[in-house]
Length: 298
Image (tube, rainbow, N blue to C red; front, side, top):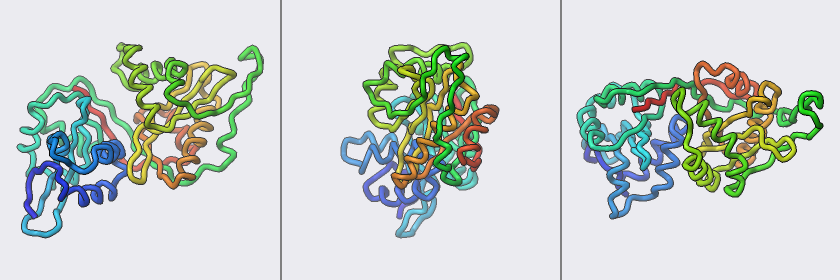
């Protein structure tokens, strides 16, 4: 097998799929993009957007040291072996990325830092996270929503959970805007409402997302944002400010992950290192820390 910095090909596809499966919890977004692209064809776009680092020479089976992918939106996704294993590819990675529009790098922290060192571009900001996987199935009672005091919320409206669909995008838009402003964008920036609605509606057509409603008003949402071979990644988890610290988010996340388990799926998420309230919620549900994770913005 030829070694080198190789575009994804039909010959490499099975080995790449197995390589992604071996550590899929670290790279669910990359695996989802890989599956969506499918087997490479003659159009060429997969060949330029997916790169395979093959370390060994003269063997029948490729010794894969990493996979890189730049999404149409300019996000560099990766699954890499140790920096020592991928160091020989440094100049090739730099050359490949030199003429590509790149807005961010997303992945495990050590490997993301290696890619930062390869790219001679000034950084806008970095955000560090903890990657967490579900350690044990939450008990059924974890899904139970709290009763809210009537004196605080004026009238007693029972909380309830239902799955949301693309047609619900506008109804859920205030929660999505709040999530993007607090969790995604740089401090002081506000999301574009129209663009947010378009991308949110598209995401709802591909993902499983649920919301807690107080009467007819959505107050909390959670769901998948990437679905791979065996793992689902949760994201977009957000509670309206007036409904926080009441057990709503933990009940909803428990509801979502129990459904993932029923479908034979494993679950992973990443949370900002300083977001102690969110880490407490996920810990109650059964998530445990696995790796450091990092997003770099240009």
